[in-house]
Amino acid sequence: MLTNPIVILLIGYGTVLLILSRRRPTEKPGSFLLAGRALSLPALVATMVTTWYGGILGVGEYAWRYGVSTWVVFGLPYYFAAIVFGLWLAPRLRRSDAVSIPDLLDRTYGRKTALTGALGVWAGTIPVAYLLMLATLIHQVTGCSLLLATLIGAGFSCWYIGVSGFRAVVRTDIFQMVLMFGGFLLILPATLAQTGGFSGLWAAVPETHRAWDGGLGWQAVLVWYLIAFQTVVEPAFYQRVFAARSPRVARTGILVSVALWAVFDFLSIVTGLGARVLLPDLNDPLAAYPALAQAVLGPWGAAFFMLALFAIVMSTLDSYLFLAASTFGHDFFKRSAAEGDRLRIRVGLGISAGLAVVGALVFDSAIDVWHHVGSVLTASLLVPVLGVHLPRSAQPSAKAAIASMVLAAVTATGWIIAGNEQGYPLAMEPLFPALGVALFCWAIDRAASIFRR
Image: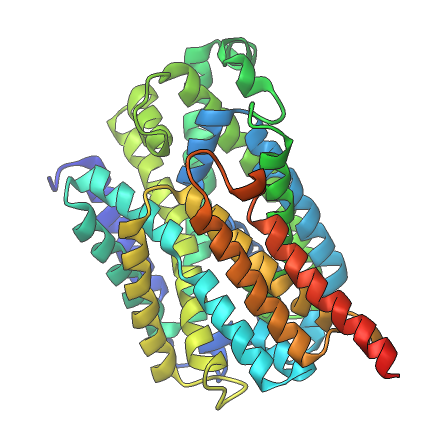
C-alpha cells in the first residue's frame, strides 16, 4: 500500500500541513482567533477561495446529474451576493473591532440575541457535508470503513487546527489553493481529449443537461438564489473580513475571490459534464470526479488529482471546524473580546468534530446537507444580521430579532422533516415559509413601534 501513488502523495501532503500549522514563537496576541487581524491580500484571497469550495464532490454530483444548471445554481447567485457583500459590508465590518457575527448582534440587540444567534451559527458551521466528502475520499483511497475514514478525517483536522488556530487555517489554505487549481488544470484537458473537445462534449451531453434549470423547474433553482443570500450572513466571510489587514484589503480580497471562483467554476463544471459523457452509468454521482480521474489519467496523474480533491475538501473542513470551535469558545462564553480562551476553543473543537462525525454517518448526500443547513441558517439569521447594518429606525427590536431567529429555524426544520419523496408541503421549499415567518416578525415589530410612538 505504501507504494500506491496516492498514499505517497497523501503522506507528503499531511506532513506539509503539519509543518505549516506549527505555532511560531513570534505570534502576537489575537493570532489564534483572527491571525492578528493582519491578513494580506494574497492570504485573504487564498483562504476565501479555498473555503468556499469544500463541496467539490457535491459540485461534481450536481454537474453529472443536472449539467450547466450547476453554474446557474452554484455560480451566478453566489457571485452576485459576494460582490454585494464585498462592496457594501466588507469595509464597514473591518472598521469595527468585532470578532464574529454574534459580536455584532450583541452590540445591536444585547446578549440574549447574541447567544441565540451564536447557537445558530454554531449549528450551521459544524462541517457535516465536508467531513462526509473527506470520509468518502479516504474510504475510496484506503478501502477502510466509512466510520474509520470519518474518524481519521475529523481527528487529523482537529490535530493541526488546534496547534495555532486560524493562522494554521490560513497558512494551509495558501498551499491547498495551488493544489486545487493544479488538479483541475490537469484533468480538464485530458477529459476534453476523449470527448472531442468542447464542441464534442456539448453535443454528447443529454438535452436536459444543456437546459438552464437542468429539468428541475424554476422553484428548485430559485431556492438556491435565496440560499445564496446566506453569503450576507456567512460566518466564514465575516471571520476573514475581520482578519483582513485593512478595509481596502477586505473589499478587494472578496472581489478578486469572485473572479477566481468564476474561473474555477468553469474548470469544475466542464469537467463534471465530461464525467457525465464518459461515465453515463455511474452508480454514485458523488464519486464522479474520482471515477473520471481513474478513466482519463495515468496512475500518478489520477493520484495528483485525488490529492487536489483532498486539499479542496480539507481546506473547507478545517475552516468551518475552527469557526464552530471559535463560536463555542468565544461567543458562548464571551470572557475575552480579543483572543478568547484557547482551552475553551479547543474543547469546542472536539465537541464540534464529534457532532460532525455523527452527522456525516447519518447523511449520505452532501447536497442535502447544504440544502437543509442553508435553508435553516439563512432564514434564521438574515433579518437580525441585516438589521445590524440598517438605520436604527428600521432595525428589529431584540425580542423581534430573537423571535425571527427561533420561529424561522423551527419553521424550516419542520418543513424539512415533513418533506418526502413527493416533495415538501404545499410544494414549497422550506426556505420560503421560514423566511416569510422571519420577515413577518420584523414587519409586526416595526408596525408596533410606530404605534408606540
